[in-house]
Image (cartoon, rainbow, N blue to C red; front, side):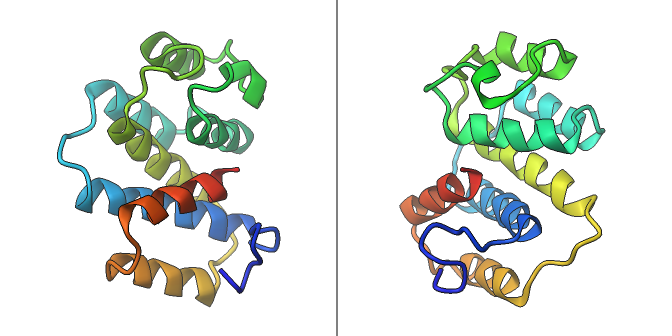
Length: 152
């Protein structure tokens, strides 16, 4: 983390969303036993299908990493959008019923759609961190903390 500073202030957006996607995917594949729900799979498919613009996708990431704290509107989400309305109906206005498994599944999709639709390239530093994550260098609690920091 020395590269981006203690508060990740100098981390570029493309690296941020690339790391959220890759770290969430890694957690889902390597640390979680249960599978994501059909609701999470549907939300992920709709995200990949382009139902949210980038701003709403970013806001949803922030809402997910801060779930159970404030309602979706607080995070700048438009609850008139069909996908956001469906998320609220499935998991509650503050995402109280969103499981860890489902959150990592949806975060991986949100991060991926932002990353993959950008013209920017990731930095060598974020690629190196992804390699370290894939090699199992960070324990689960540090991976969760990384996603929390990246999402804020």
